[in-house]
Image (tube, rainbow, N blue to C red; front, top):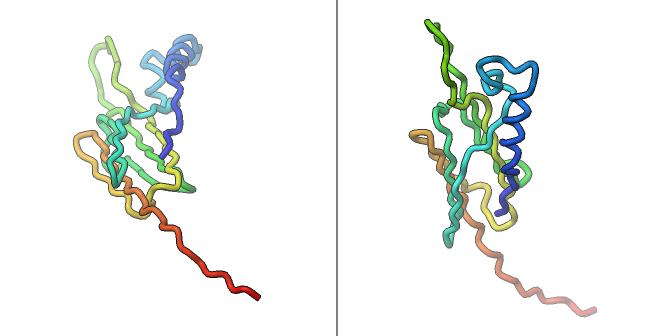
Length: 144
């Protein structure tokens, strides 16, 4: 299984791009729904499977999609800010709202049909079973 690389400087670039953007609202760029965030993951390899844990704080289970397409495992989720009537002004807004997305290239050593997923307390846990290695088979060739 190969991790599709994530550019750690991308998030920093987005901070500066959003900060200096004239269209930036006073509540932050993430609220507008334009930003996509990559959830933090831990990946462990066992003898028989890969285990992936992804942090998705505040995401509801029905806003989470995990799919496999063309050998790529994708995690997509969204977290919307609750609309509330507030008295006063917002002094600080640090919570992340918007779309989460992360993808992994699975490679040939996994069994795509046996992926298991569970989600609790903002933590997505995936178990991606390894495929059984193909045993070389001898084939007799007929001599003409």
